[in-house]
Image (cartoon, rainbow, N blue to C red; front, side):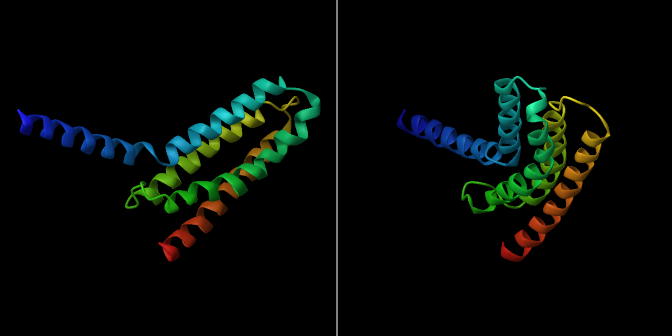
Length: 140
């Protein structure tokens, strides 16, 4: 009876370790970023004119701050590193698109400036992903 109980405990711990390795990663981080942007939109009751400059500036803030935070996952010991760079690239592009488009939808005037801000934000996103990838390959 003791051996069955010990086997169950080891299996549960092994299963939890595998699950935590896959759930702690860039996907969870970008989901949190999306939720934070959605909360800011809800709290400020956007689209309002006084927040327009903030929403345009998020096209620069998101790539310059959130991509380095995502590459900071290399410093967390529980994160699996073999596929982390590919996961960061996929989630950086898809999550960056979702977060940028959600934040720029809160702009009060949906004119050509919003589209330009989106294109610039995605361009900065690619540049930051390339810089982060080079740093990650050299450092790790």
